[in-house]
Image (cartoon, rainbow, N blue to C red; front, side, top):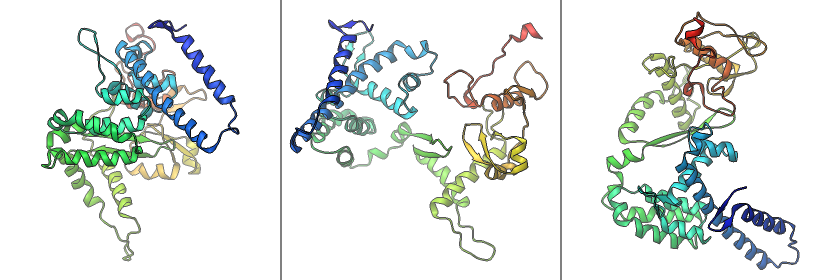
Length: 376
């Protein structure tokens, strides 16, 4: 089924692994003493630590082969998310771990050691957990180039040794202290390194809310602070009552207001064929009753009263849908998809119409079901 490698059949190896796990699940624990149970847990953890080293080889090979494209996926992370039923963040983490700790290929196809060979070797022995491995690789990756080139190998070895006796949280504290000690002159805050490490991640929850995480350059932070600071100022009521919001809530509301101001300005670039727009999928019943949940263009669900607060800012684009979801009415026909047609398709499909694809409308392209040149 799986073929063989190094004289070993993958199917046979996986059957043996399954059999061992079946036996462990069936084994009783009542005959074990407390110390023996702890020894079993230590051994199990060591083996769990080793399993990702097999995954690293597989994921690295899948990425090198371009298997994701063969399955119609935009990236290896998307493929892993679909096949293994992982969250996007979990899938990305596995691809990153494989790139850092899995085997690599040179220009001529020869196998070269992993980027973090000492971490990979320790994990293969079971003495390093995936969480500890990530602490070490992230710490070294965030070092400035000159510091990493000079001290990276020493720091890697030192942190691997520390990981034998501390938890991931404790290891992270040690790693921060060691990284700081390597750069007393402030190289860590040099502009080009901050630029290299810049990034922003918006993680959506199932209810449509989100968590922000990121690293800002000094200029981006200055622009953001200059924009939000006046909007985040306390706003007492007309009778002088103190603003009840906490500082964090005021800064959140300032970001909200700044985003709406940017949308109203009409200075944002077009996105997927139409101007940047908050899209709300509402029915006549929503307007009549003022209750229920409204779906946004990015798949979030918000209450009707919350949605109605946007009507002073939003452009309302009605799309008449039939009982089976077909578009009954929208704007006039046009060979190139117009903004109104794009909004109609967004109301109908809520994103990519390909089965299993989770891309929002702003990431999708539009296609004629029948070629336009034939039907015009």
